[in-house]
Length: 318
Image 1 (cartoon, rainbow, N blue to C red):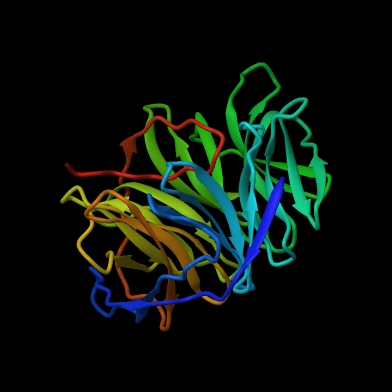
Image 2: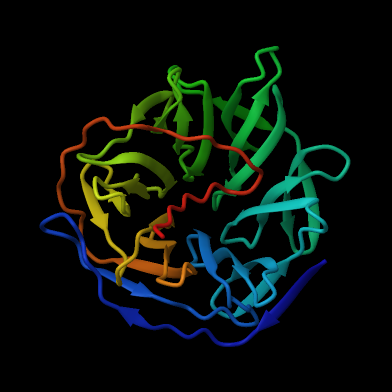
């Protein structure tokens, strides 16, 4: 069911560009994941505090495999005919996800042991990740008759619903060990918005001149990463510091799309960009200085959101 393989990782460095003055120093690296065939694309989706990467790759036969890599060992994960959907890993090696085996429930897989986790007050829960202290997060459907999709954080046996007061649909895409959550929601006009939830207070995340902003990940320092669409229809990455200042991140080569999916407490980011052959190129991104300043303002765009695996925004230009 779960197949491990091992060899040393390789890395390469590339140049970067950033669209905001006083940009922090950024270093792109491209770890080769031992035992993984990424002929047709690779995505690094989550990164734990100890640097363990969770991702997926598409091989030469267009088969997708999910994996974790801790710098030494690669573990691969079988969806078993789309029965298990994997979402993230923490420093303890616990992999979180959603199971459709005998009902739709959350699970963690640790040391070969599969443990089911049951939410309260929600139906059809979907995990989108796990924090280092074991908090699961994602989305589910309310059981009050409204069938509204809301976010949640699951800490042990306690389910906390995350629902922005302006939302008709909400999905938590990232959380930290403090219980802060980020993600996306649709408002009553079906506009896409991103949010930060901290101690029950919701803050919209916006950037000057950008639209379709998505907040994917947050670390314990409150740094948020994600993507947004620029006025040139190129999808850029961004790093938002806890004080609300932004750094915009371009791909190291020309690309119509770069996604920043997660950031750990060491400031290491994981993501991908679209190559000139329409193949996803996975990377880690190291940050070496405080983000530069930009002034946020509201922006939104309509988007239809669905599916059981973590949201991956991709825009391609023919």
